[in-house]
Image (cartoon, rainbow, N blue to C red; front, top):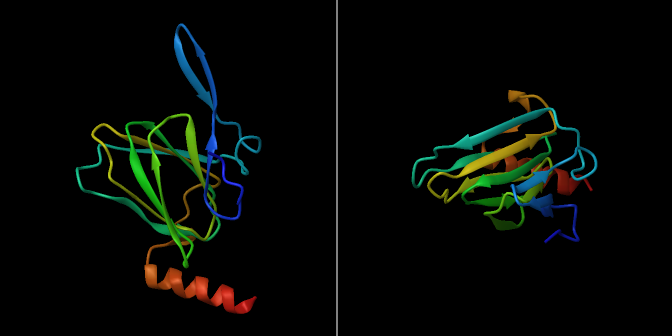
Length: 143
């Protein structure tokens, strides 16, 4: 499940421990994921047909996990799009800066947890898709 191309978003298997009391999954910063965790938030009670995300970040890394239920995550690097189905609490999607992320198709009762590499900073967000594409095009032409 883990991608061999860590330059783009990729799935990781989270440590999972099982005994007669149930299951436990673990994420350790800078060991399981390539960043320090500075913020944790979760999204839940998403109305049927609604989506979340629809933005990118300049600097923020994220780990997205479906701790309950399922949802889809479409990632876009400005050139290609890929959709991941997250439906297990022992699988996470690592998303690096410069990736447009949209979450959709939430099942009833789904809970999306995000571990983020930094505190909330509105200036880090790119909310306009045209601006995102323009930034990506400019970065490509600078190379």
